[in-house]
Length: 493
Image (cartoon, rainbow, N blue to C red):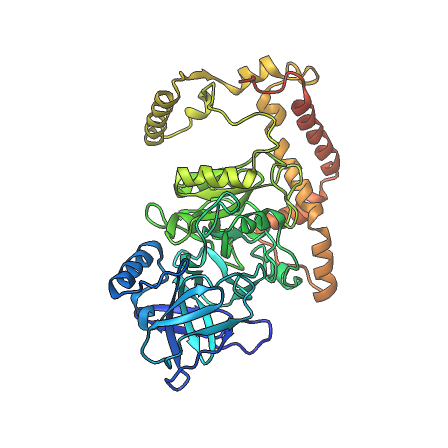
């Protein structure tokens, strides 16, 4: 796979042992290769201070350390080993086909030192490598790599493989970069500089240029050390269609159970990828009406919908500004907690984070579960009670509503009052947020953009209702009234 476009910075795909690798943008060196200019695997090891005690046993211990820390590096990269004692200056300590140059330099890297780890020498250029993983669940839209080592601008990789960089390229997590080296894939509604945002719609993609700026919510993760490796699938325009209604892209497969379960909701790709791939640490999704909660539950992972407005939605294709919020998925509860706190920050919290003080069970929802699910839930509730020293309280939503409804809605039934409120807000906002796209598409191609049945309803049938605007305004007022009531619609902790 050789690039000819000036915007494509990768050079080739190679096999090393049983694995395939992609070469990233090369850095010029004054190294000379004696093997007819071929590709030479290289390991770079960073040394501290004036340590000259490089012995075979020391190297073997370093190799063992690398193999424990990293799934990209392998022993084949020890064919040529360079030690880096000072920034950008490499000393050959073990090699077979490289001329015996005691020291060589690299040019064009803006960091202090080249990161340790696996590289490929091609001619006089040294390339970072990306191990290529298959995507059997079909969870990804594409993989991405930086346009250069250390760059925050990305390039889409047009293959069925996902390129994953060495963990050795990243420093250890620190207070300033708590997510250093953590591999993250983002839902394809978030802008990533240099890559088109597709929302899994070929019609939408046809009108897009590569994004000129990364969404601030994703840039925050990058600034904290996260490594973005790709974009994962969403239902078209983050709509709520089922897996059999996907057309432009195939729905991702949920890895749980028989392998044919619904990955659920618009963050289906985020949920399936994280549940199925151990080489991925976190995924980013979004939630409007359940697209963090649903995939977390159905894919057996942890997910959180943060408080609305807590994380910026700038640079994110919207459904409804009143409902949308980014969220994060994780397989590990400890890492999940750390990443969430890092992403959200804590300096401007109105109340400090603390243990819960109340455990409330809504009996009408609990009754809907199957016996198997009830058993799992009951086990969790008992563990939660034991861990927190709390005892459950059982109630219903109507009981809570009766005692805490605002005066303007006093005496109303909760479900009758709010059963369709969020749906109407979401439908109306989605229709209006896609008007300019639909008009631009018709103007450019002289046809309507393709829409699955649910999208067609949102774009056509819902807009034909003469009461749509008044219904939207009524439901929005209901939500604002309940939210701003001094009594609020839920009891205080």
